[in-house]
Image 1 (cartoon, rainbow, N blue to C red):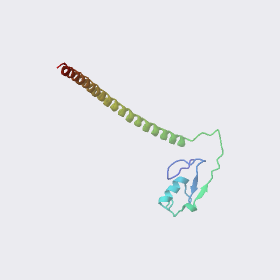
Image 2: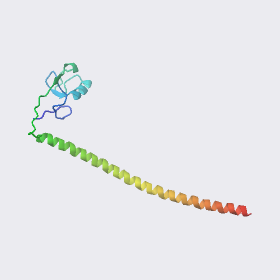
Image 3: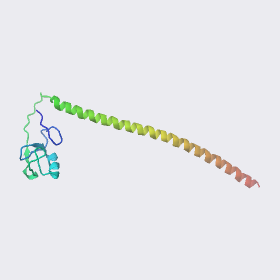
Image 4: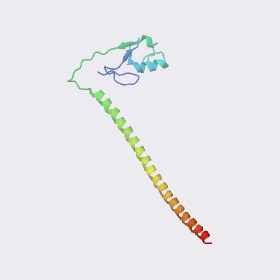
Length: 137
């Protein structure tokens, strides 16, 4: 059986800081503190609740090396990792699209630069020829 925090929907792990409200509902310590900053009520039943009346929970968990994670937690991990992969693939696609656009822009700018350099060379040649003509006069 897995217990989850109703605020963030994450599973309570033995190392997590967990609090119980006076009405008996259980939450992650940080989740509950953030909630209580906005509202002085229990997130689940809306009974009056303050940070000073919270009860800290200590889990006594035995380490059983033969047990494996249950399917619900494995499915949750799989879903989270699948979501992360999709987000990374989307980011990668965006970066690849941007890179292709930048390469196209770079080619256009390089072509413009070559044209301008050629124009400068031809103008310098013409200017040199005109100076030479002036010197000959």
